[in-house]
Amino acid sequence: MRSLLSISSAVLALSLAPAVLGQLKIDVDKPDTLKAAAKVVVKSLVDDYTSQKPFVAGILPSEYSFFESGVFFNTILNYAAFTGDATYNSLFEKDFFNQIGDNANFIPSNKSARIANDDVGYWALAAISAAEFGAKPSDSSSPSYLTLAENVFNDFVQRWDDKTCGGGLRWAVQASSTGYDFKDTNSNGVFFELAARLGVQTGNKTYLDWANKVYDWTVKVGLIGSLDTNNVGQVYAGASVQDKCQQVDQSHYSAQQANYIYGAAVMYATIKSPTWRNRLNSLVQYTSVTYFGPQQYVDDGRSQVVTEAGCEYDNKCTTDQKAGKSILFRSLAFALVYDNMYSYFKVQITNSARAAAKSCNSAGDCGFDWSDLKYDATAGTGVGEKMAAIESFLAVVRHLDAKPVKGVFEAEEQTESPSEIETSSPASQTSTAPEVSQTPNSGSRLAVGGVLGGAVIASLLHMLL
Image 1: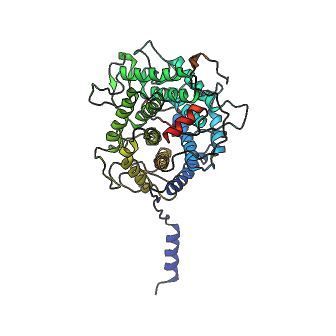
Image 2: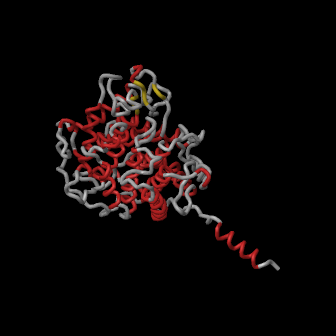
Image 3: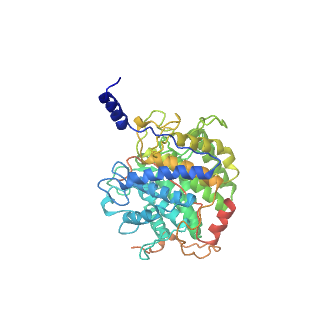
């Protein structure tokens, strides 16, 4: 007979053993299961943010770059819009405005010396998402979300550099910062996407003209593979002004691809030209092969799961780069409503969502490598991994239960009907409101498709969704 001591020791050992956590359960044909899974992971994501010590409102823990905080807030917005869960809306508004800076352009004074254009760009994309979803600051003295996005756009116009490489934004804002001599596709891709979305949101044609200008420059300098290259539709990292952008850095990551996909989708929806359809198709097709694997239409639940192709195979992805998948899914969720693209991508999107669920535990911790279909506690988790899982679930939700949930955000005042497109330059208009990424190829983002102000926006969404 075992002694009471040995029994007690066994009970104590069991009580101290870590709990075995199961995987998240989803059904890709049932949006409620996807929303429930997203809810679990969002809670864990927000806990990572709010539990940091010391806590700084609007900023993720110190290991994350400034741009990723902007991506984080965009994820919170997207989650609320497509699940109807407004739990984190007040947190979003309160903390988001803490980082807009003195000039309402997302350059806080303590980051101005080392800020990069893609840093502020991702915050601006969160702002335009809020405007599109109809969100309105509760404090009437705060600048509108649209104003915040416009302010960043105007800054980008002022920083457009025609003196080197025939145009383009430099990665860094300040000449003294690392990356000032590099013109990257994160910064220019964010500029392109922001311009396209502002053009639709405001009805001002000048924004669309700038979107055209940025895209044309990107192709001309060789940062997007064209029809006369072997990699049509591939977005490369950037090029140095030191050699007049002659040597292209051909490293590639999903985030930089995503910005151009989102912007091209907006331009195609707005202009309806064969040129923009072909551009969107080439970007999406390259994404399909490169970031979801070469095997086509294999619906086995394992094949064609998203991979950060530029670094994941070698297990060398940085914290910045781990944000890319979330940006890619958000971009594809919007773009795939065109030309029956979702049917082409369905296996890749749904298999990735299934794999994401299996790579997350029931506490909302998620891994980065989804191909093993399990959560690897030894590899750890993080903000980028969790945002990727959330956005993969929401990408499927958007095609099962497509429209944003009405009433989640307070309705913003209607803008003037943009039936007559304005031609005044937004960059010449006076603004109404008075840790940076470590590598130029760190990440990017996208997201229209909400309850947008203005008749053109409403009719566009009705057509698309």
